[in-house]
Image (cartoon, rainbow, N blue to C red; front, side):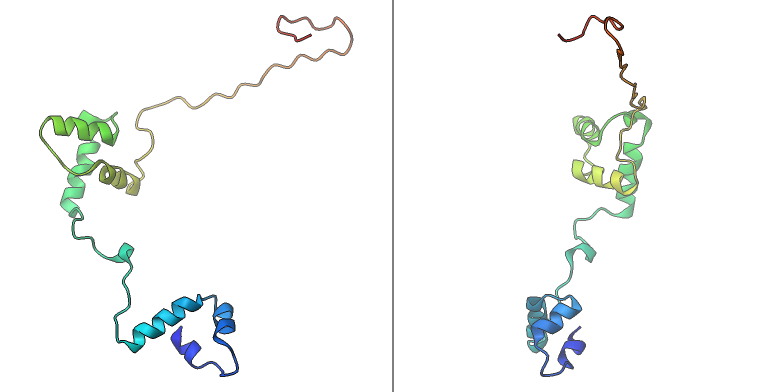
Length: 138
């Protein structure tokens, strides 16, 4: 990004170059300022490892507990409450939901009948006194 902007023609304004490249001008200035001060580029929090993150074994334990026979039909909130009553703490409720979402298990856990869509009966009269019904509106 900076190479293209640094080697642009002097007659081409930075605003027009940024607009053409689809960049924000203030971001370009911030990158130039960091480069001039020899600052390392800012890291994205999303890609960095979190210090309090669960290990792979702990994550497996939580998933195994949520999918166990004891908690088959219960939400993570209910599972957490039952575990706390028995004196056991695995992780937060939001972490349980996050682990289920990662594995595609965050939907309804019980078997349910799909919604039924029934057609509404329509009574059409083509001449007087052809259709009689108790719920007609005058």
